[in-house]
Length: 159
Image 1 (cartoon, rainbow, N blue to C red):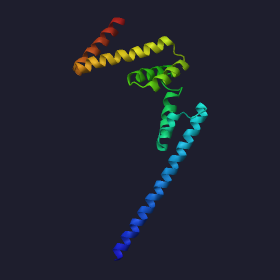
Image 2: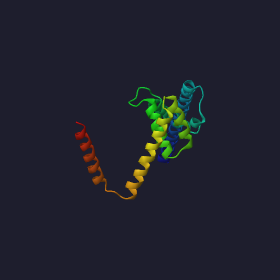
Image 3: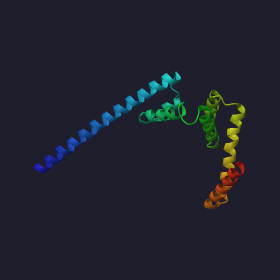
Image 4: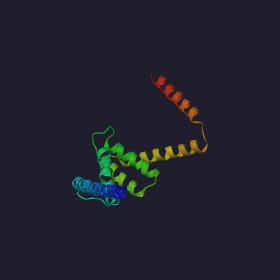
């Protein structure tokens, strides 16, 4: 009987601790989302609906990723290059929302219409050759060796 009472007490304590931890975590997630929404508002002057599609637990992480890479001017790639890459990938996914956004963002970062066309053309070329190489089941080791040889020859010729 004593053992049963002890097990009930332990079970009740475990339940209470779990509930308390869940409530604390939920409050932290809500605060984190609220802080992210506040920062998004301060950065853009609005909170685009795309962020509101996320569960609260994911908002801060998604915003940190965008702010830390895409919007960060102190990365290895400049804003124009990042947005042209985004457009090239968006063209291949394909994602109409992303294409629209990254086209405008590339232009806002100084990309010309010709650079935008070229980024899309590069995406198409890579997709074409990926289809050919994968579909033809070209041996990867042979491809790598031929590619290494090609670049070695080009380097030797330029010196």
